Image 1 (cartoon, rainbow, N blue to C red):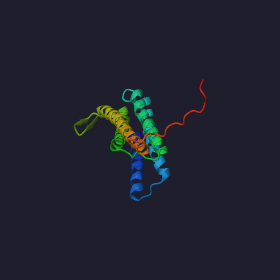
Image 2 (cartoon, rainbow, N blue to C red):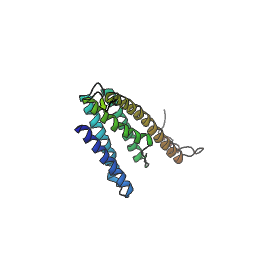
Image 3 (tube, rainbow, N blue to C red):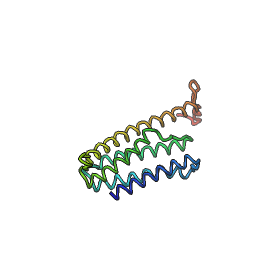
Image 4 (cartoon, helix red, strand yellow):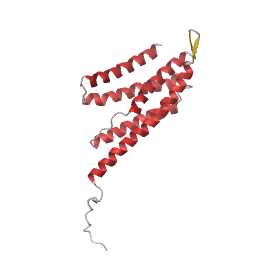
Length: 180
């Protein structure tokens, strides 16, 4: 319960920090850079530790796919930033973060309890953990596709604005080297 409580508290404070920064207009370049990194570190730490403590619930291949998605999106955002545009957080990405938190907390609880009995109502803790982990995986992969489509659309628009249709790209200079 303590581990789940600490993870929930860290997740709530992270969300509250972002909400308050937006509400009060105190968004900084450092915050824009560090907040997504903190999110990724929090989730990565939880998922990696769960591979060790609950490998029957959190197999390594799921963690590799979820963390691979995080690296992919971070890379796309970095490329976008160097090209002068940003890819804003998408709704699927926000849902993915919530599902990651739910999956980690459910798996932490399922490490200790198979089910809970609430006044005669049986709550399958392990079943909830398994369902939330699979839902997290599916939404993580779908959100990666969503980000990639958004990224590709921006790159395509940027390329078209630099080279409008019907205007060929600047031709290469002819070689002045004599040929034999």
